[in-house]
Amino acid sequence: MKPMHLIRRRSLLAAPLLLCGSPLLAQTSRPLLIAVPPFLSPSAALAAFRPLRQHLESQLKQSVELYTARDFRDLVEQARRGEHDVTLLPAHLAGLAISDWGFQALAATMEATPVLILLRQGSAIRTAAELRGKRLGTLGSLSLTAAVASLWLRQQQLEPGRDITIVTQPSMSSAVISLEQGDVEAIAVARTQLHMLPPGSPGGQVTLAELGDIPTPVYVARPDTPAAELARLRKAWHSFVPDPSAPPTVVNTRVHEVVRADLQRAARYREVARQQLEAAGMKP
Image 1 (spheres, one colour):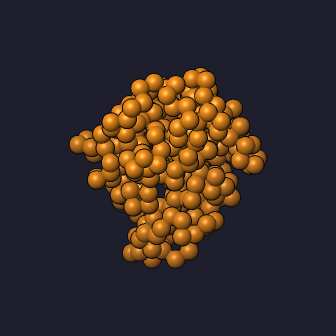
Image 2: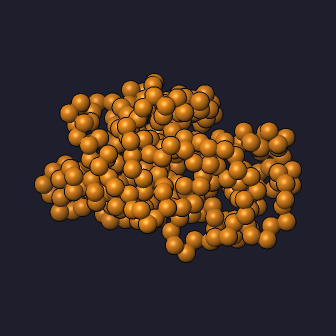
């Protein structure tokens, strides 16, 4: 794929989708390819990851190209095919990638973030029971927020697909717009994702429920990454300094070494990850 600064996520269906790269550095070395989850629109992801990309290019003296995918299934399939050097995976899938698929832990992000069920301002819904017969917007079926939201719905005696319609959203940017326009009555979102939405996104949502904390995404390197290269990447990632004037997010955070506690948090959702992959017709 030829380098370009920004393309529409869904202009290609199977190939990884380039968000940005640096043509000048690309002339002197092979670029580092990083894939990020499709929880933001391409333009929002480009803005959110720009400080980290620029930092990595400065530290590594190497061009960095950011890619996203059409959905979480594509992200996992591309990672397992080895199409990128580094992939930022939801924690439950990252844990499986490290324990079962041979991927190497590169860097952990925030410790945890709560999952929220949000309503648009002025909604008449006051209780979970009133979601019966309504529509809930979530990210793709392999996302951790979607899994946690489904578990919560069942606890409320609401069976997804029967008592409530699940409407898959291509990104959180799309989800808040769908909520604002009335295409869905509620959305499930991680708080850190809200903080990453671009200026001008619809705001003023009302929290119906806070579902507790989930572990946040983890950067993993390909299984065949040499030890010296892994150490070089870790050094560059771990030296990133977040912007103190901006809210803490998965991107705007000081990353840390993936330690036992991070893996234990991810392991709690390992069976969820396996079930999601099997439901999607993918090998766990």
